[in-house]
Image 1 (cartoon, rainbow, N blue to C red):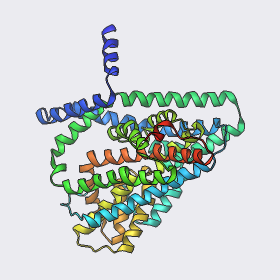
Image 2 (cartoon, one colour):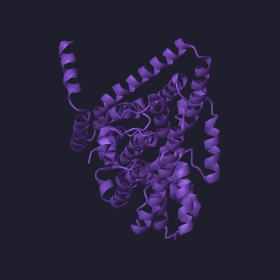
Image 3 (cartoon, rainbow, N blue to C red):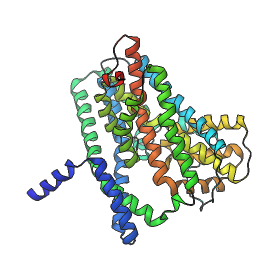
Image 4 (cartoon, rainbow, N blue to C red):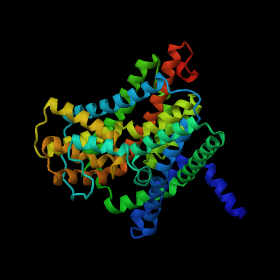
Length: 416
């Protein structure tokens, strides 16, 4: 037992990022040297399954607990957060359209992917979003329908606040803390999960994601980096009137890196909430806005949907007009907000966007197949952008309110 405890202590003493990088390297080496070791790939399956299983419960209990115990009403800061989430998601889609026109790509289509959920158009997406709001709360948690989870968690939390029973509020708080701790335990084991995921991807695809689909992957990642390092900081500067990069780099380091490897915005909520606490934000505000951001702040998803759709159009020789690109940007932004409620996330909203140009489902689902191949990189960068943005804009809204009230900004933002 002492040996086991000593090993665990040694393991925990090493930085999580260093451990994850070690797992990544070991997974790649094992894939190249022992390609038939299925048990290694199973570690990745277990890791992803654990995150998918606990994340919906986490969102429900955190939002319900926050609203039940909140001592103040959600003020104009909350409206600012929602506005920033929606604005940047649309801008991300619009910028993806521009980069696709500047650097057009075509692809060699893979085998068609299969799905039971293929949105056909904007009307169906709207209907799905509205239906998800009032879905059975139990089925919403089971199926990972985050729109429905947020809706019922808000109602449950507000109802518990109105009842005002202190014992129940304490129970909800303890439950939220317990579930958050479980997520931390799972993330602490991320190096083994990453090892399995890398092993599985390298065994199946080798280095093809960097050759056959390298240009498409470069366009996706480049656009996401442009959004993360240029556009989002510019918006933050307009609101804060100071150099936003200390906040940007801190969010990317403490939130984006973890999200990059876990590939789950919802599972990264405890990390983001801990960062918000370090930044001195109001808990009543960020305990609601962070789970909300994990659902509707989807800059990376909007970029993925737009670029993959325009790549399909380029491959088929379809000329896309400027008005059509604007409509595509709006459709991608709206669809991205409901991506978490669709099996497969943002990739399976590609057929919805492709329908705007009359591209058949067969071709569109082949683009989804390409997305799954490059997903080991694309999805990681997408999640990092989304998750870091959750904290960036929550902090921007609060610090903007501080400026209006004459309160000084944190020291790290005042440094020259």
